Length: 460
Image 1 (cartoon, rainbow, N blue to C red):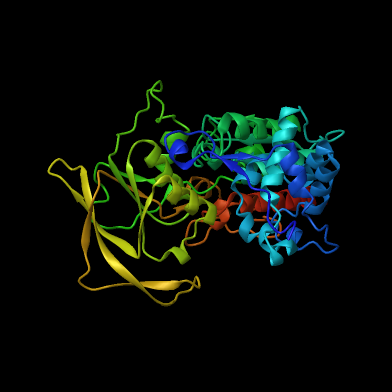
Image 2: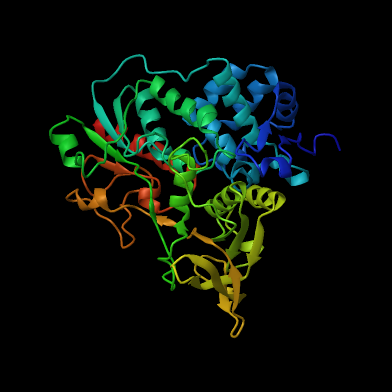
């Protein structure tokens, strides 16, 4: 039946894209976007909005696409999202807005993410900016971290008239958008930098190379810099490891380091003096989006790339699209497999990884079936690089230099989900610094909640 299938999205061919870092998905043109937008049923009770963590008026912006009023569509998006071009590319729409789309009950859901991307890209190409506040209210707010949580918080506060300054520890803004997600999924010059500039166009100031807890403390921001509130959106950049023998060998990376060296430090480019050892065969341990990013990056850098994951494909936490793209490009999946030792040569370099076969038992606390080792099933995989993608936790620097700021046993800042309020008056927090590693859109949701909490606090 007409309208049951979504308009297909053009992509680079797998063999071509596996050898470059250009964006895989090419997106919709105007005709394709309008055609896809017409599939929207314009539900009176849109479940898609309930599935969106930042509550975008999805039928509203899609309706404007149908009318051909792309500028109005962008302003509707901008009312709720500070990063629509990013979200249109990296959000897990299949489990959020598109997962609740009524159209999807009898056919394909509307391609909400691809339509969001189209509108944001069109706005950039046509010089359309989000609307800024008419005037400032005279109150200063500091935002720590320029990742998705910080940018989202800063954007909302600026729209409400606050004088906002973002402090970023690295030399480039964007947080995980810049250092973590590869160019082939999220282009930096074409997408991330313009999105940051849009937030700055609202009046937000941004200072890089400022390490809160070293360069300046949170207490000093209040006492000496004159800020009335602080939002902590510093992310979770401290990598986790398995604690198995051999993890300190040369050729073992955290996915965080590997991707940062490739993305932020440009180690993949010959004209940058930040090289990375060239690997012939890389093993990536983990099954999330970051593991897929690392595996697909290693492949593009010339390695035979293996994903080693202790559960089955059904339990892979990565987006289905990322798994699909990785397979198309030639990443090899060694599932129901768990590392027990990293093997080294006599010079201390990785030469392989010893693994054990697994089977799935009863569900654990996460609801996924618990992997159980099969006795006597150990085997070896040859490799000259091992990349650990097991998650990250917050760096304790901020919490350890801020009196009265409570953290939990995982060193995450304790904050209210609805407002971002912490145990220290005037300090709010959200994103990975509170939850541990999560998705871009959930960090943005937390940033918006923090902005709302700060607004309520400063409006008393």
